[in-house]
Length: 422
Image (cartoon, rainbow, N blue to C red; front, top):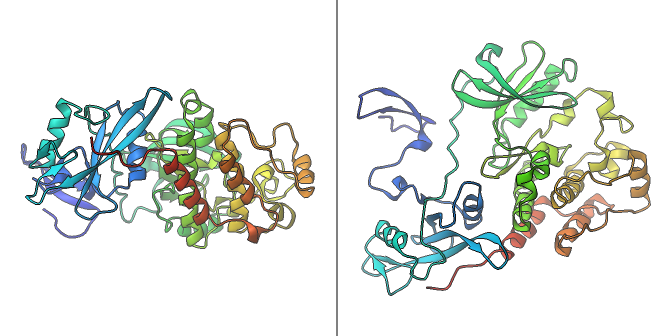
């Protein structure tokens, strides 16, 4: 009912005649592939792996997606279990087209439509790694935020559950306008200037990327300031890595966490922005184990001397580059140093960096050229990425774009390529 470009479409429920607005990402044309639960349009092989390996997908869960290499063609991705290595993995099969317009995975079994192909392989594996079971669980489309809802009334929020407390405030799960689940960060009164915060927040809200936590709105008319963001079910990456579920994550998944964070930071780098406080506590994790960067830019507007001075008890010394500790020189290259420390947190399932060392001991050790050693079970190539991030001269450290490329290739190398025709 609303063909104009918009985040919200007016729609009518045919069974009742009721009319209302629905998000445009819930809409698909009838009798098209987009209406099939198992069709994932436009997602990459890498994201197919992420989605299928996410919690809740049984062995045999599957999707059909557009081929990344051949326009107009498709790929079938299936969740499998490697009994030898006792690890879940994803197998990918090319779906080839017939000149007559049909499809096949193996030339001995051809089909007029993708629907027929799916129906056939739900009945037997016939050379696939598994018989197809259920469509992959899709990430729920986020409800579009109201266009003009930036400074919102405090009364529009209902704080439901306290999720944590930090140095500068608390984090709550909340409901906005009785129907939208959000996260609310409440800032301790006096922790920042409202004017400085609003200036930074206006920049932060323009940084839109699927590996950055979405900033929806603010409450600044009186203290405490509220920062309203999208809600991430699994909480911080630090807490997740230390949890029972987190400690079960295999190496490819840990490397994937690292590559997702590098992807988000590569975007921040491209936008000529700086995070200033990159660490596992400031990465949030969704129910489908997507990692998103939070609190970017917030460190710049915090007034607390305990945080801004290097001697302060709240200053994150163990994550901070030497030039930022000594001279207050924060750049994207000091973020790269912090990323190296974050990689150490990931591979050790959330262990505190420089274990057993005080802040001053860390500063003196770094000045002598000390770097944390390679932890047990960490692949040498992964440790080398950390070491390049910890180059003394900032200009010698890699870009986030380079780190993303290395980590994504590393992730792909630990998974199989396309399977041979069955």
